[in-house]
Image (cartoon, rainbow over all chains, first blue to last red; front, side, top):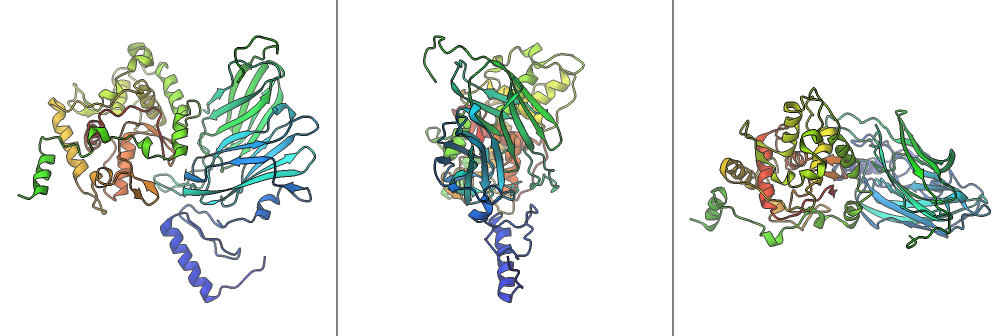
Length: 170
Length: 116
Length: 254
């Protein structure tokens, strides 16, 4: 990542963005990494949208990554970011020879990218899961599954969040 | 004192793949929110939740602040044996929550009304 | 006299004007999105169930110098059917209007000889929910004559009076604009048939008093202190206003 000095335009833009963020409460615009820490009322800093690569890189290095066999279900429009039902189905025989070992739920915008990690195996019978997550605003969510052969499969879904989590509401 | 609710099918036959639903009482405080006086509520989330059957791990989840308060976890298990099912979770304060259930798996040729 | 003056007089006098007719009443559930509705109808995973389980357990637990549980005097929790819909009600001993929380707190100290439960504490909220759950599916009703009459009228007056920096009355949003959007949220009628309920924003079960105090904050008015009679008067008015709506327990809202 190259660092940049602020141009006057960027300073004005930064002020505008901070004001907008403060008044709309929890809605951050994507920006370069060299952006000044935007401390909101919750003290969160650096809340920009992650790239797909940044989201999966901690788990997938040189292995295969395919968008198949995983079906992630989240509401397209979530009422409230504090509790968003999430379920996923994975097409896997879950035998000794071929099964899912791990599932990672990854957020594009939350302060903490990994929302949960699940561990399973042939004893699970099925790799389907459900839980409820927090989403801090409109973003993509990835369900990444590791296969017993070491490769990965995934699904991605975009979610619009009416009222973001992580922001105080009294 | 963290408690939980468990839901599994009333009748489980050998070889069935059955759904387990667990609703855990836990605030899952993210550490990002403030209380009514403006003071940050300290982070306290479940670090891991493990289900063992007769001492063998059959499910594990490691949630972060990204999981909602009073978390719900739904997963599946293949019924191979009856025994002690133990759910155990530990949070940032090192509190341990536990729920025990005696799993009864009936023989496959037992008469059953209708499959789930 | 102008038409509005007459209407205003009618509202502030003994007449009980229903600005939303009975057949048009809708629970807040109607204005909630699909996820909230599915969270509420999930018998197992309703997020309010944790508090409900806790309150149910608490009901049978002995406490205080009396060494009695609620069950010792009141019997099983199911026997409390019809009790929560009688509140708010006048307490004969003090003459004050009690909501269900006041009654529970009072009973603990007076009869169980146990330590007082703070307003909105986990224990109080859980117990209120447990008692309310016994009335699940019963219609709201309100006793507004006799000693309760002046309380009802005060509650109605509060509902109709503009206040706060935003200079809004409850009626402005909840009678005149329900169904329309406030920012991104559809406005409900502001009915009370779900309380105490799991509020997703607060990530816990909350009482009607907490919600009403938050409404005061919403219009930037001075929030009455916990236990204030205005909140109880307003609650009584809301029970009358929502007459016939069925008790939902545990309800879930945003």
